[in-house]
Amino acid sequence: MPPAETRRLALPGFVNAHSHAFQRRLRGRAEGGDFWAWREVMLAEAERQTPETVRSEYAKTYAEMRDAGYTVVGEFHYLGVDEAFAAAAAADEAGIELTLLLSAYARGGLPRFRQESSTAYVEQVEQLRGRGVRVGVAPHSVRACPADALRELGAYATENGLPLHVHADEQPREIEECLAEQGLRPIELLAECGCLGPRTTVVHATHADSQELDLIADAGARVCVCPTTEANLGDGFLPVERVLHRGVELCIGSDSNVRIDPLEELRELDGIARRQSGRRDVFAVDDLLAIGSAAGGRALGLESWPEVSIDVGHAQLAGVEDWRSALVAGCSSDVFAR
Ligand SMILES: [Zn+2]
Image 1 (tube, rainbow, N blue to C red):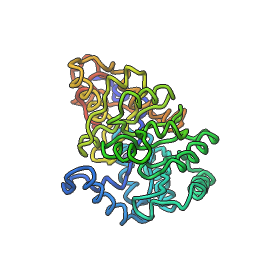
Image 2 (image 1 turned 180 degrees about the vertical axis):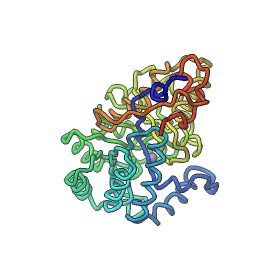
Image 3 (image 1 turned 120 degrees about the vertical axis):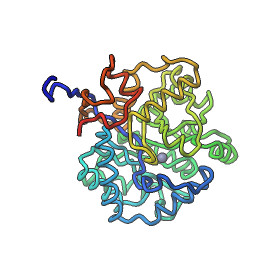
Image 4 (image 1 turned 45 degrees about the vertical axis):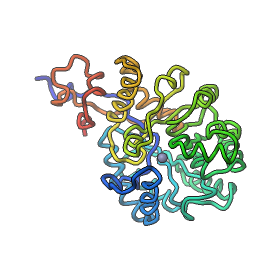
């Protein structure tokens, strides 16, 4: 048997480009028969959060992420500024890199989600930046941000070279409402309002049509797919081949944190592609690993982040010919050396 140190191999750390850490508490909760009913349960959980609960509970969730091979998290945060600082402190404690994607919320949701104006939102972002928190601009969705707010936020992100993340096309109802209000589908509205560019990450895009996928491709934007959450919430399937055909970059997120395991997110994504195409080779394994790491780094505006170490002596990898392929095809995050 070789010495222990030669049985460990390094990989770039996995990047969790989309998380709502407080939703970890909802795993296993059965109530909420569809996305919109689940959202009511989620809002009640959001309402009970305080800087203290965020500080302590996020530290535990981020430690789970770190153990599972994620070395970076993009926290899409809509609970308030004090809670944002608490999330940053929790990430420090857990030893995970953080980009705080501060959500802009102009209407709907809970009062604590909303800012009075785009100016008030930008002041919050600047407060975080001023104290050394890495940030991104995150208009929550076209539901939460009307066109004028999207225009102001898109301009601010571009002028400051900041990542811009936004939920879009997760559920058909959101698309119907946007069409009724604006005469445009959500991703068309984002493009119209200057929110679609190379620093943009569209979260979900589950029900994006061909025109919307073309807009994402033309802008050089990317899609963050959150397969375990999208399955859990009954959102649907990303049209994987139509996305890849256009050269749109993908990254992954644990989103509701119903599961925390980058290998499972990648396996779900690969499984969707295989089921949709009837083929086993839609993704090369190196492409999947890059989706789990480098693409997420770009989504969060990072150039470098910590590696992870694989225990290639782990029973889950015993006897395999190609440990990289075996990682995604058949391993849990237990194979990462702690
Ligand atoms: Zn989300």
